[in-house]
Image (cartoon, rainbow, N blue to C red; front, side, top):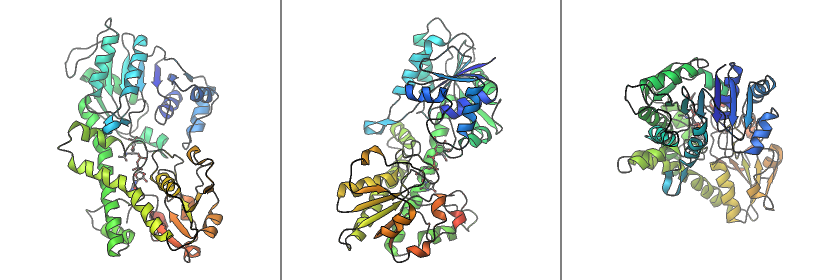
Length: 426
Ligand code: SAJ
């Protein structure tokens, strides 16, 4: 029986572990978070993702997956830990380093270590060097050198989209970048058991860069859309209609403006490119800055409109980081609500069907409460449409016409089948 140790049971590691268990592997999930480990062993996912709960329950009940707070010996190690940035927007690789230190004692001749976390170029080589230093008794690959080593190391960046993770885990094409061709082949033998998309192999540095430019590409394109929305406000053009019509051109496909870019990926990864080549990454840096400025811009628009009311009530529709996902990480809409509360002088009503309670940062504030859509509409002086959840696409917007509306989503002006689906435009 082939064993896989998945290091990090978060948004990427847990779906991957459950998927591998469903394919008949014996999977040991390792995480330092004791509460998450206990919840997983009880068959309960510690975050929401469509179909994950079902897959996890089956994996636990068949005994193919178990979670623990120590790693175990395995044929494959998949490292799926966070790679955020630290001060100065520099990559923080401490979780990957810790993962190396903790799995090193469990490596055995024939083990393959795969880094899935999005990482700066050169990380797989650094990871290999760190493992080699911890285990001088084993032979490790050297970048692009032909000779075979006992341990294989490769990068296989995750590509799955929150909200569609389990489908994309299987269907998406994958890139594998081995330290050597032999390493790529060993990693390939694992992924080809469950990936139905194409799997392309390359070297580790190229694979690292490919992942970074995928997310930077999206960031730059969203920044273009966000810049257009600000220009359109200035010159009095409906940005949604303009984008829709521009996209009728066969070679134009503009993304959708919004409240900014949230989540733990697109708002972070482009900085890894900027850090590696600061002088040369002017467009990528500017795109990050344009997207980061968007929540501030929307906050000021709301504030300007609030001026005309004595005790303004602002109803914010949506605070998660994107449509149809209950994840608040780095949410631009959440930042807007925070800024309104910090500014004071406004009462904020939050309506978001995907969250059960307000984040703890708000607890105790008398100026904010979580309400249903009817209350949010009825009590609002200003309606701020911040996230295009599908529940909001069904709202009757003619009932909002007497309200002052700030629409960052296009909910009020776009055809409903295009909203929340930026990849199907025009
Ligand atoms: N957004 C817009 N306008 C758009 C599209 C997105 O404002 O037209 C905003 C969203 O509201 C959200 C942010 O951008 O705040 C990011 O959302 P997203 O759906 O573009 O991407 P993520 O962060 O959920 O997932 C991305 C994906 N990368 C790409 O599409 C290139 C996913 O495939 C990656 O696996 C993931 O990053 C990751 O983990 O790297």
